[in-house]
Image (tube, rainbow, N blue to C red):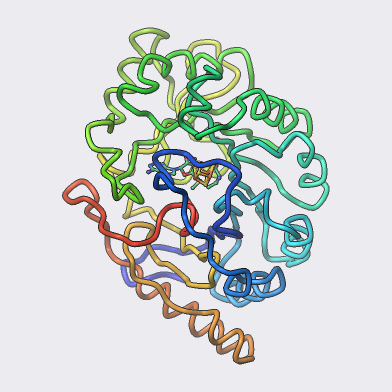
Length: 326
Ligand code: SAM
Ligand code: SF4
């Protein structure tokens, strides 16, 4: 269905857990986030029911995220059940890649089409620092497993961070030359960073793009990367993959936003950057039927704000990214 601003909403991003096996500094506060009790998190069956309630309104694509979706028990069962809903034609997953090596084959078999893997640095010591303890080698094994199992297109999410990886952005873009990888540079967003960690570290897309083209040559625009959503993609000369840019802060793409989010605790969230949510869990657990759930879904779509104003203000929100589902 269309929202109040004539945007067609067909995409649901689902945070399947608020838990994570890493603690990235821009995503989680220093001491980590207190996980919500298990009973507050939607069960696999409840998540499937919410998706089914969205189908009559036009939901066709889902992305599983978190927290880290691969630490969620029953994740393969969830994918299988979503895959059985005939109208759902695309199941994607965003992961830190730590557990992907052993799970890539099972995910593909269960019905995942493609994965996005987060990777902000090519240096093991830096990786340990930004993730507070992660092992870069495991991520590389996960990326290779995703390529091997054809979870395509394999996209790499890189948050550009001044003073941390600005000296590596060109090297990360270079990965697309030899391998069919799609490296997307994401602007650091002022969300979940109550300690203002992000202050001064933000790099606008224009600057990242200039660094890359100065070093590696011009980008030829690509329109055919599956699930390209709000990103701009270009191809370096002779490259097998593409370079993408997601400018959520400097050039918001609200006018083309086609998505809704479901938090791990069962709130439908019309916009990542607005704390407004519609509770669907309570109705689910009260045993209302599918039609009533669809009405709640409709309400959430109609609540989608026109646009966010991230660039103008520091986000004041008590949830962090891992809880909402980045
Ligand atoms: N754990 C999975 C992962 O890291 O890919 C999925 C969840 S994570 C919240 C999803 C994406 O959000 C990651 O690519 C991460 O880099 C990004 N992210 C988290 N906090 C961010 C922030 N403050 N600004 C920009 N991107 C952020
Ligand atoms: Fe975990 Fe992903 Fe957040 Fe890193 S970005 S702490 S991997 S949820």
